[in-house]
Figure 1: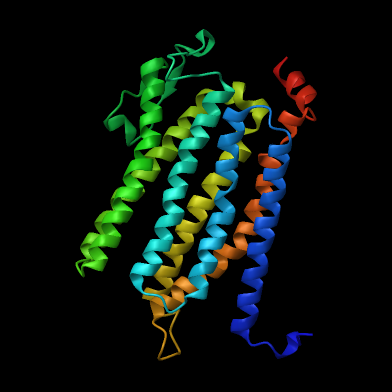
Figure 2: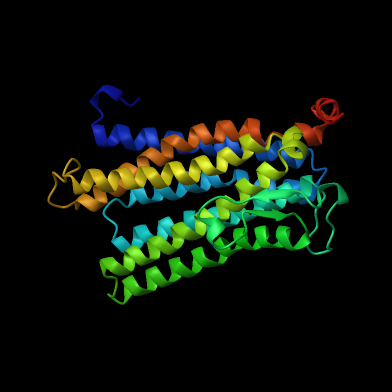
Length: 294
């Protein structure tokens, strides 16, 4: 029997992180199993399964980074790229899920007459490239799709270039900042298109609880991102320091980030169980949805 009182802080941190990962995987497996058991709408439920796997993938990848705390900068960049490339796929699949809820098919040029002609109000800085008000049509919906899917292309390309340049030893700070700006502009555009889509179709999407679904994704993406920025600032200010000759301060920063992600993904996995529950496909919430749409 393990004596918990004799564990050192690093060991406690490690076991707490491992337990958190197991909890995240457990909650996700429960949700995935429910959808597989009530497999009624493959198009929608495939998108949902890809989306809900985001939390355990983030947790497992972060735990791997914690296991190899003395890894190189390229190693951590590779792990980060896995999470961010999957994030890009999730954002695209979320838009596809919303399209499915509204019976929109871009490939078959199907746009319900009831939603054509609606006004889309762009805000700054998008008004520099688009009119302030545009009418919804097939072209507009296709543009929103392109704004989302560009991130699916740009993120993996940037990740591949960043890793390749680090391996050949050419990765100055200005280049790192250039990639950061490109990726952040790309993800901002993708998320902007989702927000616009939600505002235009808030009434029709209300029975499907899209805000909770969207916040699960946006929460993971932005929370992890700004958390990383905060840790960067703490390192720059000298608050986070290395007290071990065999550990660089950047490696300690990565370890802190990985521990926090492992813990936070438990929360997101629980929230996802409610936001993406299988009720609409099992018949449990069908009557509620019908009442809301009447």
